Image (tube, rainbow, N blue to C red; front, top):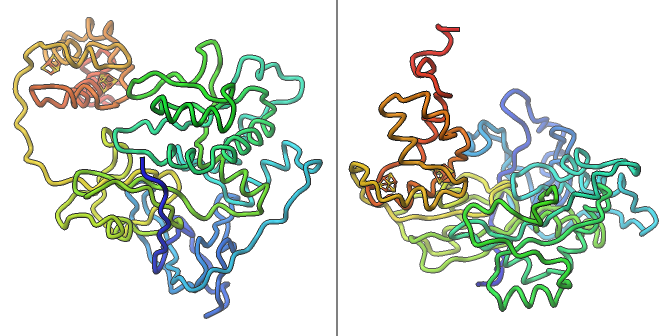
Length: 400
Ligand code: SF4
Ligand code: SF4
């Protein structure tokens, strides 16, 4: 596994408003320098921070493949000045104070791009609540993707700080149990246990996607290792969350890289730093269920931890099902994808109900393993939408 390399782009593009609000650009002093970590505006009660030191050049509307229409500010980088947060003492670190710090430091959870303070406020229990007795807060370090390795690289670089952030997050929601979940190879797992203590490391099963992050009797609440690290850095060092670590990989790159970049760095800058071949398709996220991206100027935003550059492939013509059963063997939910598709095609809707097609989460593994080249996952998802009746296929509203 490679370490983390720092990349400093010439400019960043940061979302400052959605399509139905207007960013008050006029409120920013013209030509005044903006420091890294300085608040540009607030969106949904969360500060939008500049991730670089520089100057706002202007704004423009973009359509982000993950977040839809966004009004963005282009900031030309110049300098390295940072705005620190005040450091609080241990006594001042109450659960509510930790949540407030997560908000002011603009810490996002990389697992889904949701602000960490929102998750923690939602999960926080009262002192009398018994939920913590059967619950555990997990820092997800599994890199649950064929290509992704950003969480492993972060753990390798600073596992103790990640554990400290996880401990703070657990304190914020009044949980007493917390651990880092990982699927690292044995030698690296041993190094992680040595760094943080074996009681704080849980090894998940070798499955895709991972579904079990703790003892099955425990209710699991999950946040990313980068969110833990950012929370610890905010509390201990007064640093705001302006940078992220992203895995840039794929078969159109000579070698995968883990890059630390400011939020808002465009995808093209990442691919250039990794010497991507000229002809490639960009995929954001997981190799199985990632989202295609056609605009290389798309900015990297919270919730994006893997960017793939894939060579163009000849599309295979799907053949008939040969009944090999590989899709059923691979399904982590225990479904029978070929049987679901067969019943759906033959309109055996009553029997279809007993095969639970709506339990499918669209992970895509059945399509990946199918030797006939069928998009089994899509067919199962469509079968799940019929909910055991053909009427939905013909136009639900007309028959209600
Ligand atoms: S896409 Fe659905 S049916 Fe296919 S393996 Fe994943 S969960 Fe199972
Ligand atoms: S993997 Fe493909 S060919 Fe094999 S049983 Fe499933 S759908 Fe049929």
